[in-house]
Image 1: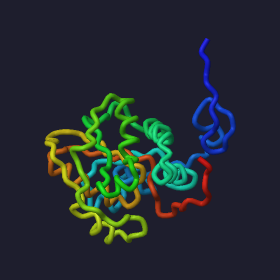
Image 2 (image 1 turned 135 degrees about the vertical axis):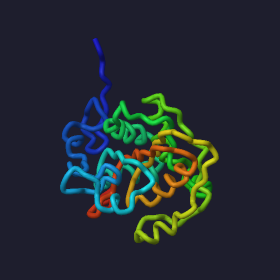
Image 3 (image 1 turned 30 degrees about the horizontal axis):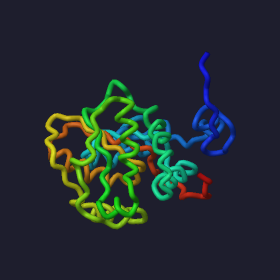
Image 4 (image 1 turned 90 degrees about the vertical axis):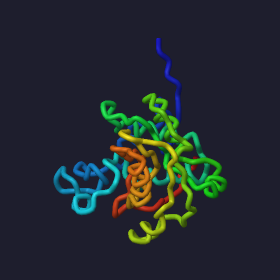
Length: 231
């Protein structure tokens, strides 16, 4: 007989066999049914958005588990700023539910942190997410071949053009990627400026396909953290 251990729902605390109770799981904020396959912006029909048609980014597609709004923003905040590393595999598992096993990449690269930011935080949340995903699919994980060489101000709150300028020339990669499909893992995609800047470097190194795997996608009307969750 199989025995299931009891847990408490990460959001409401009710006893459950899973990380979330059924009620909280089904209330998690999803992306719109129709969205651009490259950047995940909402569209009225299942096609690319006008921005990606007019000015295609260097990445090929984006996969996200959820919208960046409450309570997802609070979960990510607890991981990044409260060092609750136990949340990383839970968020990574939510992302894995949206990954197509028939379209797996050759390599996974976590979004790099600048050494100064890494020293301040003590860990790279993208790497913590990547470890779980790489293990689930048995995909090689490159965690030190691509680096963030420019210490930038936080992108949060900057307008689009300022974000592009802020992140320009921020990355370097010292590995040959000719003909490879790369998945870049991160916690949140907002405008996509940071992901696109890294994709430019990977593309120059020969990558022919670049997928963004992110836990959440911020849309134009996303909310900030509304209230704390006691982790």
